[in-house]
Image (cartoon, rainbow, N blue to C red; front, side, top):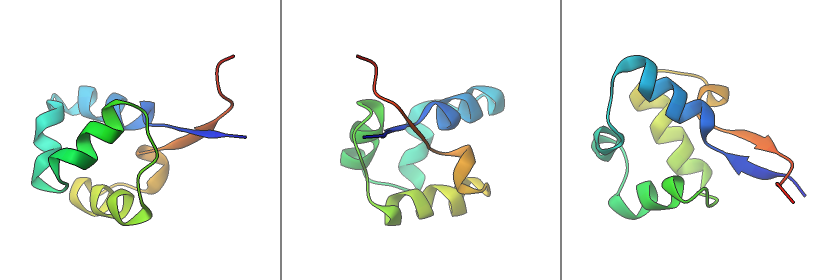
Length: 68
């Protein structure tokens, strides 16, 4: 089963010089914690990030094979 990877999001933030806490303008602290721990979040959260950062979904998340 594939799992979400938020590496594209972290790379985007790094490229923009934005700290993770800047995402709190768009999402809750609980949602940010889930992202930071590579846990699944709802499409609503992904949509808020896409809209807030003005990027398509592939700049936020990708589905990858889990590391075994």
